[in-house]
Image 1 (cartoon, one colour):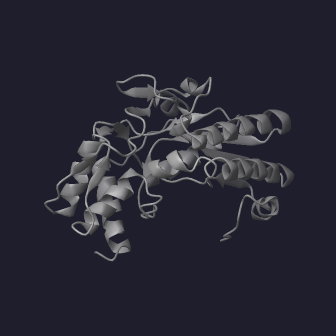
Image 2: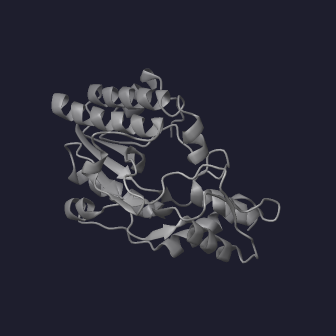
Length: 270
């Protein structure tokens, strides 16, 4: 295991040396607060890491490269549920610099494939969650953030950003990994593909599920002054099913239960 700064080219060279496959997941990212406020930190380090890692992989002659893009490359087009197809990302118009960094990474993967023959896969991950995610409130995404609040209640209030009507479909981490492994071996031309679930839920209903897991009588507070993110979206999984011949297997209730139990132990509450 190497703990290194991938914004330094020499580190990218050293960690990719003698590798056959490289899964590039590194990014400067956090929850909605972070990507909404830290515009430079979500752009510059990511651009450097994507640039240096692909060049290092070219020099080290790796066989295959996988780049984790994001649902953040898409821009909401409708007030009703947006089921984003891969082609909806272009012409590009992401809402955040994090999304623009992912667009850059996608274009770079395609360019390295066309210019140097570097076999690359690009997966656009929609709302992954699960054990070992960051529970720090400065960085946490919605599921670990709400789970943390439920575990710590009443020491911490159970506040939800927005009115709870936002809709998402969440992808459990083990399914996400399985999808990436299949994509790595089936795609080589850097043609982007969505990885996501079709189990759509509102943030308000998600909050209720997490409260139920806690076994506590917790009032849900909706914070209309805070960031709410994109209103309603999920992945169109048509291409994913056709190209990968794969769909996620873990129901949301099961994934939430596993994640909640892990978080209880992590926070010393279990």
